[in-house]
Each structure stands twice: as structure tokens, then as C-alpha cells.
Amino acid sequence: MTELLTASQMRALEQAAIASGEVTGLELMERAGQGVVEAIFEEWPAFAPAAGVDWGPAPKPPGYLKQEEAGAWRAVVLCGPGNNGGDGFVVARLLAGFGWAVDVFFYGDVERLPADARVNYERWCQVADFGDALPLSLLDRKTCQRADIVVDALFGIGMSRVLDADVYRDLMDASDFGLCFQGNLVAIDLPTGVCADSGLVLGWDRSVIVEPDTNRIAGASLYFLFRADLTVTFQRPKLGHVLAEGPEVCGKLAVKDIGLRNFSKLKYPKGRPSCAMARGIERSVLPKLAKAAGHKFSHGSALVLSGGSGRTGAARLAARGALRIGAGLVTLGVPPEAQAEVAGHVTALMLKYVADADGVAEVLQDKRLNALCLGPGLGLERARALVPVALAAGRASVLDADALSTFADDPGALFDMVHKRCVLTPHGGEFARLFPDLAEKLKAPAEKGPAYSKVDATREAAARAGCVILFKGPDTVIADPSGHCSVHAAAYDRAAPWLATAGAGDVLAGFITGLLARGFAPMQAAETATWLHVECAHSFGPGLIAEDLSEQLPHVFRELEV
Image (cartoon, one colour):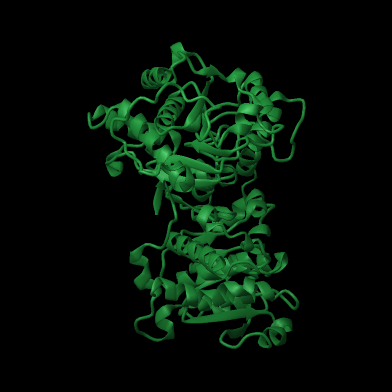
């Protein structure tokens, strides 16, 4: 897991380091600028100096390198009114030192720049040899079109509101008809417009591109305009890099170490636990995935309840997933009218007649059944009748699909029945049916930062339900009632768009159920299953259908040396 930070946590970390005397703000800004330049040279090796990068004292360039000078790489750096702009001035100075032709455009009031940013503004002016950075209003399309790199250092994690109308019009006029900047766009920390805590583009409403509301127009402009090819952030990724629109507009994400330490000792604001991003399976989990010894019941016994005739596919996908991930025995509980249909499709799975609630109670008399999967293809009426009986048994349970939707008219009734060994796995629509107030807050266009995020919504949902919530999507968020939270983003090098296929969620429910049967705690089962789910899709690649996910697990396990 990699810790994800909010904007306030990152600022607190920097302030703690400065207060301790281990580093100054100027040193942090210099390291940040160096990190951005390093990332640019790593991403586009053709831009790197032939002799390599030397951060020692560099000679002052022989005067300001004009755009017209032949042979020079060209950069446009857009600097804002805060410390992100200060980072931009450092980048501009360093690129000029490597022989680049650099134009800097500044938005803000020089007299109001933070102290460290002001120092770097003055250093840039000394290098540029013309006294000032140009005002952003003078940015023109020709300058942008000739640039090899456009650096967005306007706001970064400090973006707290939609840009003023005159500013985004200047940017629109200078860009390629408001669709994008020419050249390679590099964002420092975050592209302009993105909320660091939510990944939402401030003022952007996906359902409306342009309407009379100024903020709507501005938000749409920022969403289309600032789509970076490379985003460079520092020390740790931020929540906004992996949530909502963040991955879409960040392009490739590079995280540069600027020497901040003692993460574990930092008291984060509000005492809320930090959120983590899955970067792999913890080594401590691998032995639990392996089967070193024992018989089938040593590895758990799972029950997956199925719907009636013609509705058994989802349950079969879930059951297959539970079996593949290592549950020792998996039983499909089917009504009599579907028994023949299911029998023709399964071999390693066991079958039990489960006609009604009494049938569930009878099957659950077998104490070896220690994990349940409720919902895939179950049908709303059947779910309404069977889920209360199943939950009353107190076994570890996954509730998905129909087991969630059947309680849309009374979510509180479901929350009264679930217990701490349950995992609820809603997608966006199911989440909205169970938590309509939270969904409305999440759906509302973000007007200012920090905006309400999917992490906030999932944490609140877990606290309300009293169990683990796995809120599905490309930015899957998992939280437990204590506030412990993780983000499993199928983005950047983990992008797996092939998961947008019918039945993929049923397989995930089966993976979680299988791990619960094997003795994993609910949070760990949900996190591990979600990571493996994406890994299977990523390993298989294009052409994936739901049936392939379980069959890809053996390959993934071999890669993990399980």
C-alpha cells in the first residue's frame, strides 16, 4: 500500500519538516523543481542534456534564450500566485540553465506571492534578463504552438475554486481552440482545475458542457484544456490523482521524493486515518493465499445462492471465482426449477436445493459453511426472502447486486441485519439506492475545494452500515466502520478498461467470498480480492470476458510465486 495524502496533509508534512529545522521552504521548492525537470527528461529522453543532469551550481545562461534561437528546446511555463507557481519559476530557471528557450507567464500579484515563491520569481527574472515574467493575459496561441513543453504551475494542490472568467478566457484563447495546449503538457502536482482531495474538476458537470452558469463554462473549459501528458507530484500521490476525473486529466503520474520523512510521526489534521492506494499485495498476505497443507475444509466452505431458471449465470461466475481463489469447497444453493440448468454447467461445484428461506436455514445447519455470497442473479423477491435468514446465521457474507437493490425502499432494514463480518459491494447505482443522500452529495458539481469525494462517501457509508463497503468503479474505494480506507484505482499502469464487461462484478464477489471462507478478515478479503481482480484483467488484456477472470488466477498466482 502507498499512502495517499490530502492537500492539508501534504502541507502539514511540509510545515512539520520546516519547523523541525531539517529543511527550509526554499530547499523544498528547489527539490520540487528539480524533480519536475528530472521527470521531464525521463519521460522524453530526447530533451535530456547529452552530458546528463548535474544539479551543481550552473553558469548563468548567456542572456535570455529567445524562442527564435535555432536548436533550442522551447518551453512555456504558466506560474500561479502560490507555491505551485514558485515551483514553476524553479523549473523555468533550471530549463534555461540547460539551454532551453523559456517563456514564463505569471497570473497573480507579485507583491502577494509567498516568500519562497517570491525569491524564485526574482531568481527567474535575473536569469531572464528582462525584469519580469509576462502577465498571463499576454499568452498567445503562437507561443504555445511553438513550445515543446507547456508547464502548468498555476495552482497544483492549492486549487480551491473555479478560475475567474477573464483568466480561463485568456487560457482558452491561447490554446488550440480551447481543446488542449499544443506541445507536451506537464502539470506540477495536479492539472489546473482538479481538486486535490476528490479528483473532481471544479465547476465541471459531466452532464452539461456549456450552460449560462459561468462556473459550468469554466469547469468544462478546464476539463478539456488541462489534460496533462505528465503530472509530477511530490513524496506521495494525492487522493485527487486516483479518484474521479483525476486519472483522466493527469496523463502519466510521476512521484518524486523531495526528502520529507517521519510520515508515521505526523499528526494529520482532524485525526482521520490516512487513505492508502493499492500498489500490490502485501508480502504477509502471500502465505495465506498458498495452500501448504490440510484438506478441503481446512480452506473453508462457501455457499453461493442462485436465482431461478435462466438467472443462474451470475451465481455460477461468483462460485467459480470463490473456488479458484482457494476456498476448499463451494456450494451453489439453487431452487428446484434451476437444478438441471446448473448441473449442466458445473463440475467442481457442489449443488444444494434451496427453494426458500427454510431451505437456507436447513443448509446453514452445516457449521462448516463459513462464508456466504448473496445477491448475484438472485432476483429481488428471492433476495428479500433469503437474505434475512442468511444474515441471521452470522457467517462472513458478501452482499452484492440483488441483495442490495431489494432493500432500496428501506436501506435501514438492511443495515439492521448486516454485521461486522459482512462486505457490501455496490456499484454507483446500488450505492445511490442504499445511500441516496451521500450519492447526491457526490454527484453535485464541485464548486470549491476540498470537495466531497468518493473516499468521504464510502467512509460515511461504512460507518452507517456498520460493515465494510466496497464502492466499485475504476476508482474502487474500500472502507470499514473505523475509517480505515484504501483506493484500488484501475488507472495509469494498472488501467484495465476490459473490466467493463457483464459479470465482472459477480466474479469479484466470488473472489471476496472465497477469501472470507479461507479466514481473511473482511477488509483484507475485499482489498486482496480487488487487487487480484484487476491483476487478472490486466494480465489477460483486451478481449476479456467475465469467465476469463477466474481462469487467469493461476497465472497471477504463479507470477506472485504463491
